[in-house]
Image (cartoon, rainbow, N blue to C red; front, side, top):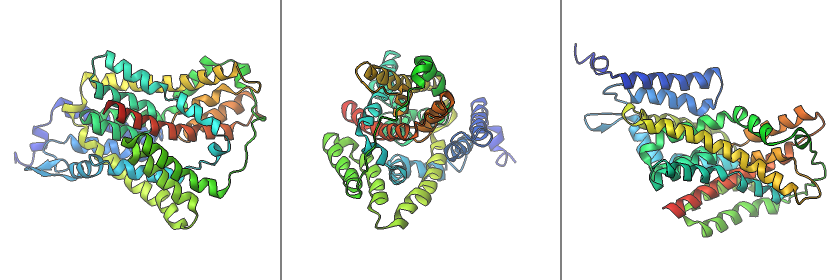
Length: 370
């Protein structure tokens, strides 16, 4: 009988609390639809990982399914890199290529990464732990996983939860910051004078190859990150095999996302997750997102001091990597201020630049800190 009840008899208060945290993530995924493709499997994975003597983690020295998936999918960086192939296949870099200047906002909106990096170091986290925490500001789950896995695998659980949770909360986080930093007149600035030129098919094909080559030579430690992102985009733009492109966007993305999410639960055990530093990481994660948004908006306001044709500073907030959520947020805010002000093309081009900027920022962190 004791053998049958060993799960209940060995249950600790910490594990019960982790059940509640897992349940909260599931509730957010279902009731609020916050990043359900990831929070749902992460929540269930956290519950399975905290069952005493859980076969999902391992029994008698033999790895369970969660441990197996984590060791072979996340420690090897396989899952995050496959996700990048899918993301690359989904992204249309056309708006960015039509107006490459928008890439500047993708760089400016990475400010939160480096601010949070310094903040974490000031709070006595190690250099590599600080880098892993700062990269939450990339607003890019796979990049956060890769950096944390290399530098601070013991913090992978809270860093991943923070990165994906705050990505899903972009429609709540960004609007008040944008309103705080801009005037109504600035939010009503129209950008009809921004002319988008056509982009040839040849340019679209050359772009991912050129970016992979140039970024790989510049930051070799990020070659896998950028290379897989550009590989997915090359599948999309080559036009020679629609089946592969659609497969990367749909089947590959769905399967790998599910496996990645549930395997993250393997590191969300009570003894590793319930720590004062976890709360600090979650707090610094929101700081990273706030300063990312502020950095992009303030950069746009700075440019307006020198530009004849003004930029609507709201689009600076789209420089984070939360694609396409941030672009949609700014587009809707523009319409709310002026129903005739359509900022979708500009917002999406900044958002695409932010996706590229976050990967480069992650590569720089890997190179400089590693």
